[in-house]
Length: 284
Ligand code: C2E
Ligand code: MG
Ligand code: MG
Ligand code: MG
Image 1 (tube, rainbow, N blue to C red):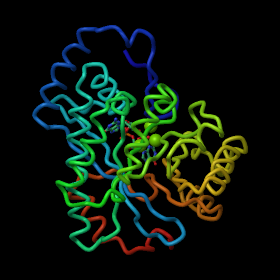
Image 2 (image 1 turned 180 degrees about the vertical axis):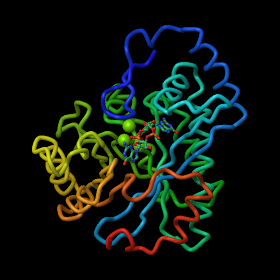
Image 3 (image 1 turned 30 degrees about the vertical axis):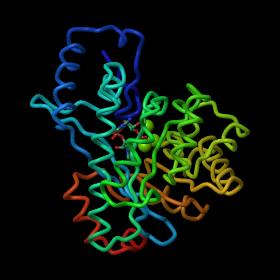
């Protein structure tokens, strides 16, 4: 039903995925119950400044564990978007992630931030900004503790509507990040008009960074763009020492990937944060 790309673990959706097959209808009913009972889990993956080794934040990633196995986020997020569950799912993730971030700060990681992914539909939803404001208040966090990640494709899907919400969110003080950068079609001009503070280089360009000139060009261009527009550039999917070193040497502001840590369940992430000496993965 979903073809697997040659690249490990990347799912590619085909036209036939749009049909409501029996498997999809069953999954949807299950997902509705899981979302409404807040049974999805949130895992956390650190974002690290490669120059200092400091952990600057974590990305919250939803996980759905079912009795007969896990469903990948790319699949259930799409289902949630199509079945009207995405607003509740997003609210739950926001609440869980902000509670976790407040906990890290109480544990002495005073500058920790957390990033939550937003679907394009959620951005078009005028209630989002209010949900965010109330959630920050509930957890006693400053708006700067929260980053919202929106894919480049999602941003460009409904530019007028999303701009209004982005400006309201920016007014609250949350940081806005363009996810999967390099895979969409935003022009430089368009990007410079958005109230964003961060771009995340898609892991497709980080892969083979140190061996493939074409891919390196996209990363280099994004690093330049970041400097020109005063944006934090985050590289996602950093898996090797070589990629990490290249990004550090070229002034990338933050890296995220298996090289530093896989996404971890909340308790394991808290333990990782407590144990990890700031510079440990810089040595080796
Ligand atoms: P994303 O926001 O671009 O998240 C990064 C993805 O890369 C995550 O996949 C993460 O597990 C994976 N990743 C991190 N480091 C590495 C690495 O070194 N190598 C490789 N190969 N992969 C790495 P994941 O968790 O499967 O999530 C996939 C996508 O699902 C996310 O991509 C995001 O777009 C979406 N998603 C996940 N949770 C949520 C959520 O709560 N809400 C929304 N709207 N979307 C979500
Ligand atoms: Mg993301
Ligand atoms: Mg991404
Ligand atoms: Mg992605």
